[in-house]
Length: 150
Image 1 (cartoon, rainbow, N blue to C red):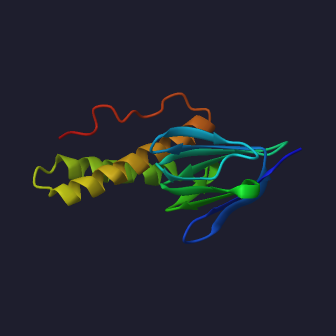
Image 2: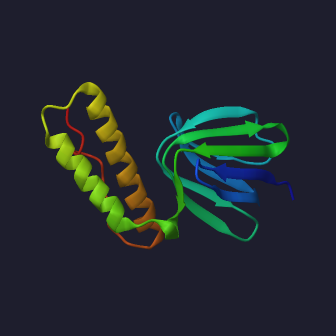
């Protein structure tokens, strides 16, 4: 069986170093699935779930942004700003980060740069919570609709 030689690294650690049969991740251009012999590619990741499959296991990992690079010979590397397996996510901490971001957004005196940083933090918190809830079989993911205001 053909394999993908995959490595997911953050500035702090190697989160996953595994031979896979497929990898699905969210990019700025949409969701992509990488299979063995995929064409070479570099794409920007957005916060969300990365789904890695081996022949007998599946990994669900929150990725807080970064890049995915597909090289010849089915070598795939993800350089992530942050990443956590779904079971490592501290949902309470993510909720607190979301609440801090929502409070900051309510402040009408944010500069454009501050607004961009706060909305990015809110987006990461929402994605982290949704990955945790989706994989713990909870039924109420949080929507970002109506959260961002201009």
